[in-house]
Amino acid sequence: MSNKKNDEKAQQEPSSQLSELDQLRKIVFGEAEQQIIFQLTTLRSDMEKALSEQDKKLSSRIEKVQEDVNQQLDELNKRLQFIDKTHDDNEASIQKAHASLVSEHEMFAAATQQDFKNIEQSLDNESSSISHNFNEQLEQLKNHLEDVSKELSSSKTDRKTLAKLLATMATNLEDDQL
Image (tube, rainbow, N blue to C red; front, side):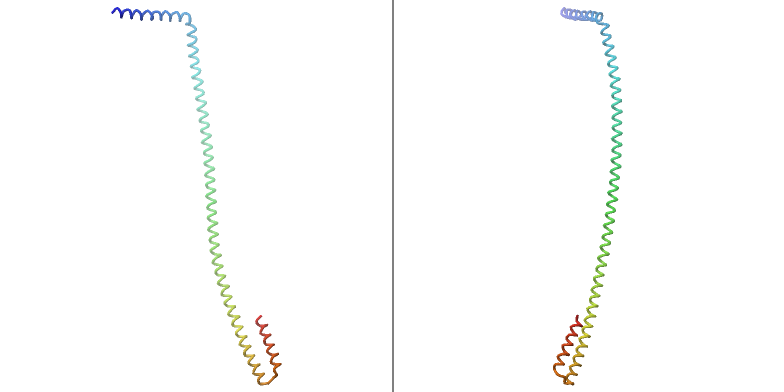
């Protein structure tokens, strides 16, 4: 037990020494300590105000930047919509032009086919007409040749006259063919 009492005394002695030391410190450094505490409190208050102002400024700048970014995004969105609309209009115009060209091509193909049929019919008609005329002229020539041949046989013309007559007929035939 005496040990406990000694421990308590030992603890009391340093605590009493501490309190004396604290009193001496207060006497010697009391005013300086209070000034330092006041300056620290003031400094803390000033720092909190400065931090608060910086926080407000930073928040204000962030809001301004956010507004600018939103405004630029809106402008970009409007530009994209305009470009999309222009692209859609161009695509519609191209599709319309394509449909028009396809229609014109079909009409041209049909007209060309009809023209070919008309030309073919015209050529067939002309060919038939020429063939018919040629056959008529050939028939007329045969008849004329027979008439001349009969006339020559009946008139007993000499051979030279017959040769001249045949040569003239051959020349006339060539001229008719050309």
